[in-house]
Image 1 (spheres, rainbow, N blue to C red):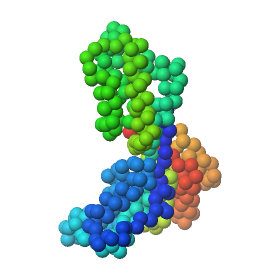
Image 2: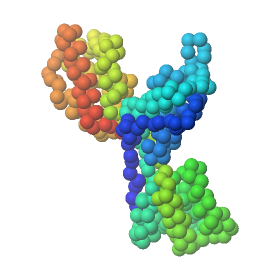
Image 3: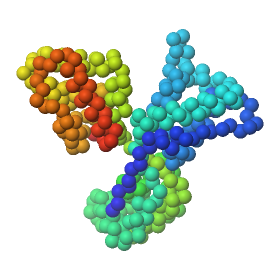
Image 4: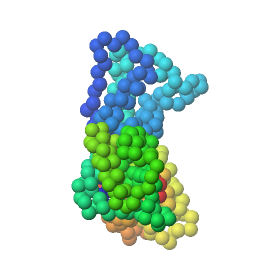
Amino acid sequence: MCDVGITVLDGDTLRSLHVSLREDTVSLTGAQVLDLAESEASRSLLGLSLPQHLKSSALRRMNIDGVDDEGVDDDVDFRRKELSPEEASRKLNEYLSAIADELKDNPLVASILDGSALRMFLEDEDDFAMIAENLFTDLDTEDKGMISKREIRNAVVNMGVEMGVPPLEEFPLINDILKKHGAEEEGELGQSQFAELLQPILQEVADALAKKHFAVIHNIKIVNGSELKKVLANEKKLNDVIAKIKQERDNGKSGHKSTEIIKDFLEKNGKELGLPPAEANEAVILLYDAVFADIDSGKGASEEEDEFRKLVTEILEKFAEQLEANPIYCDLDG
């Protein structure tokens, strides 16, 4: 069995994209501009439908998502507005840039299903036989050695994205393939009959995906240091963080080393600053080890305020540097 790989969509393909309107364009509504931009972005992102949260965040970057001081919905107001060709072109490309910037800060992790994973184990008789046997066994809950022909649908569903099969509700062509092969008819199948019916179904799914790739977004966040850099660049936010850590130092931890106090604070509160959750995975443990190995662990807790500020800043900068070089993937479902 082979697992489907993942692709990181960070907006790079959008940065060089410049869309021009047709020469005969007289005017466009804001809604038409947004639809055109989203269509062009989707085409550049391997056909991926843009998630709503991505579109909303990009619109916020353009200050046209939300309610203004007078209670007017900026989004609705913009969508209804008639734009000249010049203004429409400017807003279209501004929206594309905003999408690219949002992906840079918050990349999407997706699997691009192109049929290759399915073809790989279909071409290996032993691999396919093992998969078919496992699927049949899972569906034969009564251990009769026979299952309903209609269970073929569940077999395809159970294979899932990990094996290269898109969700049926998002890729309806699979339903047509199942109907074509009688997957909704009455009857029972033994294990060999099940395998014989499953094989051509999966082959047609693989062929369909080869013609039109399908992208599945995973609920994974990539922590690449971009959020932490914003904290470092914002003097007020940075001062607030330093003040909170200093308070930890002054409240009962005076005997601890400064690095220990800072590390403890970041492990508990780092997520709010753009650090990965301390309990996320082994990569996070290695990240903390790499950062604090470069810091003078012999520093005491009695440093002057300026020295303490420099120490906290240095540690946060090292985290940002490490995450930019080696981003960490965090499963949001975990």
